[in-house]
Length: 261
Image (cartoon, rainbow, N blue to C red; front, side, top):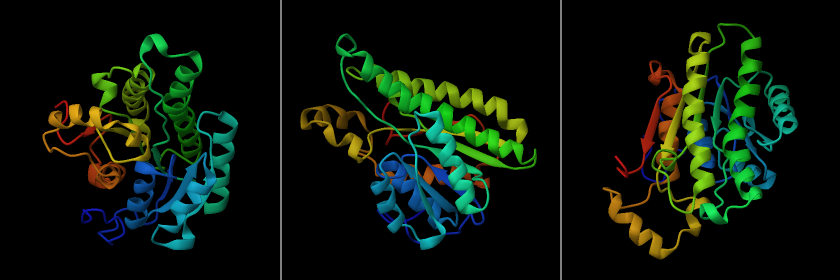
């Protein structure tokens, strides 16, 4: 693994020759995944609804011009299909690795959650993974049964535990866990492995809105007594995409510092 905070150190390069598409690659865990996968030798397709953020991620990747940026709204089928085609055209081949990381977190107690907030959480966090995985797997399987692939979905530990004021978000992430297991069962015999990662409290733009009071309540529940770094999640993602995890299918790996274990 890379040293603390370092996602650019050359390691054993376990993903050389693979094309990896990362949704939500413009910030946070998605950006860290792009960095680690590029370090591991993959050619990375950085996708995000925020094209400028994705372009900034591109400047941080080792390997420079071999990587590409594609705009994608994961909640829109046409956008997903267009982005997948663009990735294939620009890379000269289909991605065989997928990281579903795009996500939103709109917080509100259940009785104060309006339809728009509910639909946004579900649309990006859950429907987005459905649409992107469907397009990815359909394209990959059309190339032949021997086309090996791997998918890692970013869920959340809150998809297991629930969380007050986060009903829509936790419901979407619980859905990601069960969708992962169903996809894993459907695709395992077709040479596509599907797993997911359940992060806990990670230092990302999404968690920046947590108040000091909330952090004081959360920290005693984390045995490591700190929040995680995006690259600590990304290292697990890279492992699950690589052949080092070749016997892992439908696994939900917790990266939480021990929270809720």
